[in-house]
Image (cartoon, rainbow, N blue to C red; front, side):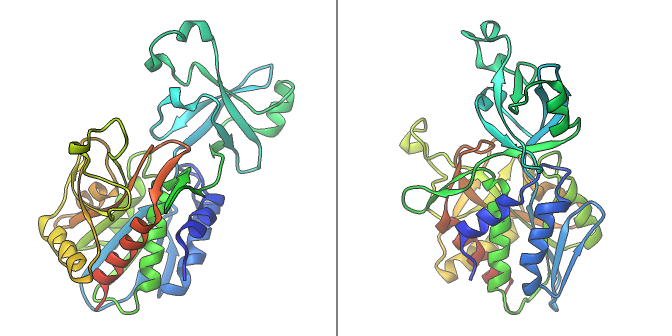
Length: 337
């Protein structure tokens, strides 16, 4: 059986930034999913679509395989690299963060013109203030290692912290991909014509899920992603609603979507019948592939099952393994005959 941490590590080793998913992560997911699907295809955009045939209406389950990352946009004569962000970043959080390119070249972020930014407002830090040090002696050596347009992702590996917590890069949304694989492994016979989609380019506008949904034409859609946990010290105990280890969430709304009440009720009923702890989720910022599935066609009922996660879009995203395991069990139970 799949192990959450081992599977997360395997996917992380193949992680690619948005737009570069077809090699590496896309191929890895296709290989992992193939034993549990009747059909596995990759579309023009790079979405990996895994069909589990069933006699009911079509349902699409989506988790995005792409990662936020960085694209080289300049190399100076001293060998230092400037980059553009891919997806949502807070540049001030990147100081001294390490990254890795697909060819194995590594780098770390430094800051230019330090006196102009510090002391001062952290919001003043931008990618224009940052440079990437890849250890090159000069521009010639740097250009032999990387070129304009090359992409990089955070370096590191998901590791077990205290208890069931896992800490590392790209829980968003590799842990969603893990959940879909867990559900596929558990699902023996589906009451739906089920399409498990490992989507591309979510971090730059939910593009892959929109394209896949238009092709699949589902009646129902369930995204699987992360949501921000609010169980850290800066949040008062009375305001904590999304807690690591208290189960996956069923989304009610975020900035991009109002989820389908009937589909949510059906998921909640399944959770109660199977004794699976879940949490209601209301996010005041951010969005997921849910909205893309919902808007792709007329009459698509959509929602999202999420994994509460701390420090999203950082190299230290933290989640509880039990929440992922419960999410996989919930989706498999909901799909099962």
